[in-house]
Image 1: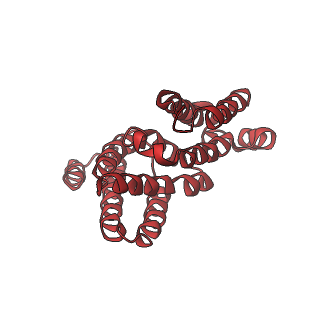
Image 2 (image 1 turned 90 degrees about the vertical axis):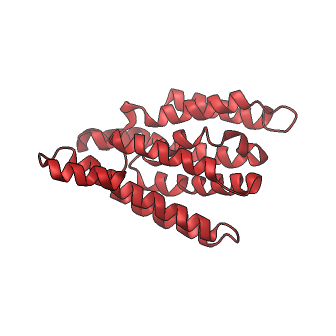
Length: 211
């Protein structure tokens, strides 16, 4: 809780002193995002790993601090305005890590950041290839590491499709991208499940699907 309060103080200072064009500090903002995501993903806050009694006790006393800092990260991202492009593709991995935390409200609040990144890169270069390449690479790594689940796949699909379909220029390419990533996620989740299967043929067929 002390750390959370400190991080929020840093956030206030960044917004007040280091956001406008003349004083913008890329490294400071970068440090903020990495610090906040490291706080959110730390072992001691992953409530689903605790017994129900311990979880209830923590929630009762502190609430889910992951949700609090996650909403703050989201707001800080949108505050960046024209500076956002400077954080693509580097921030894709940390934001992905945050959205994969198994907390539904946090996921709903932060998955739309991906659409914002797509939009931002598209306005700058007329494509979102850097973002696409980065999220595919990082997703592979995260799912293999045990993160991600069926609910995440469904939310990712639903939220990003809704955003893409409303956009004049991203409707078609955005939908193709979302379908591609969702298909990849399906294959990666299958592959992760089958890793504990003795059957070599199952292993091989999942590996071929992922490839």
